[in-house]
Length: 504
Image (cartoon, rainbow, N blue to C red; front, side, top):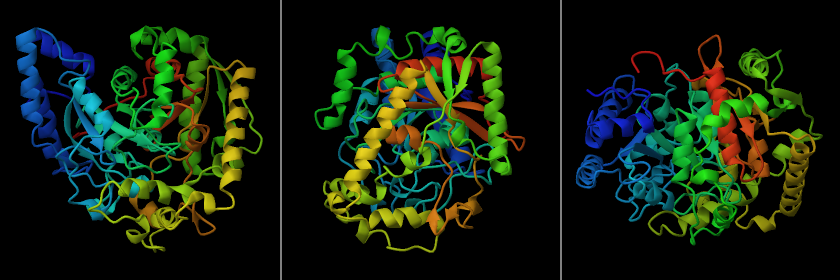
């Protein structure tokens, strides 16, 4: 069988051009790995419905290459898995819910169409948290079976794009589509030792995605390398008249972004760029060393910072007053997610029309508590007396962060994606992440989510127990290209990515 572990877009395209292998052979090899290791064997459980036409689509791409002597697009023959939050024509799409186990969309999400137009081969769908709202991977569509972490099968992969993170990490695909509202690309990227980018919301269309908070939602690329992440982003961005938030994409294009015509155009300058960069360290959001889990993450991230500093990077500690309040209070899951999800359900008349009719008001399962609260929030967010204040505080926070970065001349902010390593499955139900009767998951990803800034997670290394840890870089709106270049430098100097242990 063709060896596909750690294969990149460039290696795949070189293989096609040299005649070493075909797109069909590459697709077949990934499908065989999924069948052997994801659906059986250790059963990672990162994939859901699989395409019945992927091999034929790959064969058609091979015919195109043979006939025209060139690749069809930037992602010609590249296998991709798609988070099951996005509609895929002809494939069961569940949004992580048992009620949608037989839901087969008749059209693709806008971003899936764009990826196909670039020549990608859609292999199938990946597991996600239920309604993209839970920090653990189990969901009703998989009868609450967890997705296993490829680096230690007793640990979770994070959510809600956990299946995409695990599949990329375990080499079941070259690339995967994720979606990030409060950290759903960056948390699994950190937990699964891959690269994941949350772009500025509105650069990529959400048409065909079940929403969570429309003003924060954004699809994004997940890959094993920064270069592949950048090349995938090229094929995802763009204006969509059906998603008026993509005025951001139109603005980026009008500004001439990405420079050089590709987010990967100047990645080669990334090593020099990170060595000259000035990065703000948000030490307020490092966990206490008195907690052994936090200490393990701190050790990895601080070691990465020290290594970068020795290469020339300037790091300065930054302080944001009332940071905990700014990161939590403006979140409007409980105020508007029910309304946003219901607006999507209205386009699916064969499904229940109110998430409150799907999810119980209370659950004895701790990791379901936020979802229950979301599902039974107000039907109209404006009826919540705190809603306006939350929006005003959100915008105030964004201005504070913008001014902090500008006044100190920072290229980016950095902090751990999550203050702890990947948790065990039992931590989903034993109350570890409950505080005063409410879920309290120790993520730092809300900083970028609330400000609606782009952010990227890069592998920083592993704990002494062999669990992955990610390092997050946050920039200003439209700074995806800068973040990718900085991340490329981090990747080159730190070398944090490693393939999972045998048998994967």
